[in-house]
Each structure stands twice: as C-alpha cells, then as structure tokens.
Image (cartoon, rainbow, N blue to C red; front, side):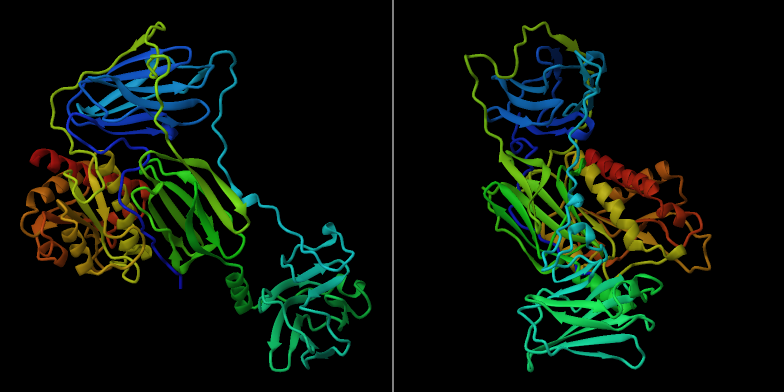
Amino acid sequence: MVKRALLLVGSLVASGLMAAPAEAGKLKFWRFDEDNNRLLFQTEDRVQPKAQLIFNPTRVVIDLPSTTLGHSLVNQPVGEVVKEVRVGQFNPDTTRMVIELAPGYALDPEKVKIRGDNAKAWSVELPPPQRQAQTQRASSPPKQDLNTRERRSPLLETKASPEETLDEIDHPNLQVTRSGLLLRLDGTPRQDIKVERSQDQKRISFRIPKINLPSELPPVLPIRNYGISYAEFKSNPRQSSVEMILHVNEDSPNWQGFPTLSGLVLLPEGGMKAVREGVPSPQLPQWVQKTIEESQRTVIEAVDLVENQLLIRANRPVTGTGNWDRFSGVYEIRIPKAELAEPVQGPPLTRNSPVSQIRVRQEDEETVVVQVQASQGVSISDQLNQPSESTLAIALRRLQPIAPRNNRSPLGNVNSQPQAIRVPETRPAPSPPPSPRLNENQDGLLVVLDPGHGGKDPGAVGIGGLQEKNVVLPISHHVRKTLESNGLQVKMTRWDDRFISLAGRSEMANRLDADLFISIHANAISMSRPDVNGAETFYYSSGRALAQAIQRRIISQMDMRDRGVKQANFYVLRNSAMPAVLVEVGFVTGRLDAPRLADPKFRQRMADAIADGILQYVRQTQ
C-alpha cells in the first residue's frame, strides 16, 4: 500500500512574488513569470498604464497613474538575462514598475505586448531579449539535477581496486569483486565456520559463531554473478551467531569461507575460473525482489527550516529536481524512488517565517512531491542543493527595500532617450473580484472546488477502466489555477488522491464561509449503454444561476450533448450554506465521452469552460 501524507503548515499569507495586501487605490498584486518573460499585475481601481523603453541598461518602465504602493521599493532578482523587477512609488500619485535586463541585452519596443484583461488586470509580455554586441543567444541557467550523484565505493579489506569491483550491488558490507565475495562483520570471525549445502544443491550456508551482523545489513542482497542469485542473512542473538546463505545454481561449485580481520572472504572451490564460465545465476524470486526494493526505498522523514535554508531530510541517500510551477508560483521539488514517513515532521511556521506554506504529498508509488510557497518579501533560489547525501536544500533570501542614492530615482532615468511602448485603452467593463488575500478576514471572493471521490473511492469506473477520481482531479486543479489568475481565492477539498467524506466536503466550505461551492464529477451508466453521453449541472436551491452559467459555457465550448441544468438533493449541495452546484463533465461509460475524458487536452478545455462559467457568474453578480 502506498503511504500518503499531507503536511500543511504555516499561516496563510501571500506569496513572496506578491505585493502588499489589497487596499483601496493601491497596487494589489504583481508577479513576474520567468518562464514566459511576462509581468502580471492587478490594481484596486481602474488604471490606464503608460509604458516606455529606456536604454543603458535596457529597461521596460510601466507607470500606473493614480495608484499607490503603500511601502518602499521592492527589488526582485530574476536571472541572467532579465536581471530584476523593481516596483516602487515614483511620485505621490504614480506607482512605477521596472523590468531591467542585464547589460548588453536589448528589446524591440514594437514587440513588447501590453494587454488588459480589464481595466484592473494587466500583463506585460517581453519578446526574447537580443544580444547587442554578439549574436550568441543567451541561455537560461540549467536546471539542477541531482540524479548524477557519484556512487560510493565501499572500503573493505581487499586489494581489489574500484574498477575491479563488480556493479551488481552497492552495499558497504558486501562487495562482489573479480576475486570473490567480501562480507564485512562486526568483529573478527573465528576459524570454526560451518559450511553446509542443501540436498537440492541450491543453497550454501555459512554459520559463523560468536559474532554479529552489521545493523545496516538488509536481510537479502542481490548478487546475480558467479552462479549466485542472492545472499540471505540471519542472526541468532541467543547464540551470538550469524548465518549467510548463498542461493546458487545447482551446478555451481561449492564455496569456502576464510576469516579476515574484519569479516569473511568467500571463494569457490577450483578458483574463480570455475564460476566465470558457463554457470548462470538463477533469477531472483519475486519476494526477494520486493524485499530488496523496500529496503532500498528512500523515506522522507522531515522538512526543516534552518536559518536561511529549507531542508528535506531522508533516511538514506536521496536525489531530486526542483522547478517552479508557472501557474501557482509555488516551488516544487520532485523526489523519485521515495515514500513519506508516517508522519512527516514539519517546522512550526509563524507570520515571520520565510515560508508561508509547505505541502508534502505522495504523488505515486515512487514519487514524493514537496511544494514550498515563500512568504511575502522572500525569494526562493532556483538551485536545489545537497548538503549531504540524505538531505536536499533550497536557499531562502529576504528581499530588502532599496533606498534611493544621490536623490536619483532608483527606478531609472527617464531622460535617457526613452521610446514609447503602445498601451491599449480599455473599455469600461465589470472588473474581476480582488486578488486573494490569504487570511481569515479577507473581503475578496472565496471559491471552494470539490473534486469528487478520491483515495479508496474511485467513483464511477468506465470504458477501459477509466476512473472518475482520476478525471476530475486534474480538471479541478486547472480550474483552480484559472480562477486564481483572475483574482479569486480558491480552496480545494482535496489536492491529491485521498478519500474525503461527503460531510467533510460541505463542512469545509461552511467553515471557510465560502462564497461559492463547485463539486466536479464524471457521470456513469450501465456499460451496455455507451450511447448515453453529455454534460449536465445540478443545483439544490440558490445555485441555479451559477449552474446555468457553467452549463452554458460547457455546451458552447465543448461540443457535447446538453443534458441541461437540473435540481437535485445531493448531500454536498443541500448541506452547503452558499450557492452550490455539482458539474457532471461527461460519462466515463459513454462511447463519445470516455475517450475525451481520458485526454488531458480535453480535460483542460473542460476546465477552461467551467472556469469561464464561474467568472461570468461572478462578474454578473458583483
């Protein structure tokens, strides 16, 4: 059984890539998307930005008239080509945002794209920066990959050089060399070693008295050489003796054991030539393979904050890769061939902690994912470090306000022959709700998304074994990202494959005092009715208008059969205190719907349609 755990710690405060909490007349939110060279920002009031390109060094300057920041300049380092982003109060009525390139890079002002989703939500997209003095294209720093960790060579009492050590096993207490086997023990074994071979000739036993096995030696180790499948180790504490059993080919010669100062040397009768030629090694039994895999499994035991680093600690050597999630702004560390301890130990977080939230989950049987969200004013290093073989680390750095020098504006000299950048004018339109302020008293809109089923409850199972829980979770995550990018605050009843009761889902929405509750499901009917397909949306009482908005978007964008908007007495609908709907995105048993629901691209389009319906409802009701 896969062990799963979720560590949610810390106060819910804004990400380090966000500006100060929303207040009237102020810049509410900003984030620089490094993957797409794009600046995103939102304001409290309608604004018509002004933009220009300044040189030496190249800077894109965006002024926001009648907008205040509410604190001193913030300097956000970015990378090697886009050097940094600065946001500050240029004058009492204007907030200035500056995207500065590294020296030697230039931009074509005609290709800088400024777009307004509405009069309060804007994006500034940069074209690829060009080298001024050379044509060589700048490349981004390579991702840190820790999977190339150099293997250790165990140190044993032997003349075998590292290149003579065979590569079948990697354990410091058992070494397979071109000269035989070397077993390290806790002490010097006696001479009276008893060697026996089973009647079926498939096992050779070495009983060694008055000695102990090293504590780190697993019960079995694969050998797969010299006609030996694997070695098995047993300990008899009462008699202070140990037994090593070689599981061999029945045609393999006998083996002998010779004591050394720190262990046992094992050699075949007739010398190594007798086992090098024509003696195949038996295959590993399934139970042995499983035992070996379990003993080699890395267990993530703790996540710690130590000074300016976040540390991930494991029980044995660990590897991992780190990347940014471009949608959520969360730094994600993926650890292969690992599982979570029960429980995972996490650090206590306060409002002064450099990290506002840590999530740890078992993504599948072999992968642990750690997601880290920085506190406001803190940056996370893109480089994943490894201070020890069993520890991964990321550096955390607080962004210090920069004071102006020599009475010169720290946001750039506007007299360096700037070039204007065209900014489209926005038409009066309903604005989206405020960007999220992740605290209990925020006045923005809170949406609870409820991916149906999960964990031991797969939900409906359809054509090709397609499970409802695996369809609705990725749809829900994409809906979440779209809503958050449009300024809504979103909570999810489950983030991964886990079981949540019906009562727990509606209770969460009520406890959070959510404004909207959207439960996402997939439908099913008898496998003998593949002709039944289509989407439908349910409501209980106050959610009718929301259900209609979502259903309209799905049908207009997805080319599906319209099964309509219906009233239903579902538990999560009737027990939710806010407008609540349940969306059925299609039939996993449907001839048309099932292959679509199994397609990630279709699921993303479905999520876009659901999110569009929610946003349309919000704009109409605000």
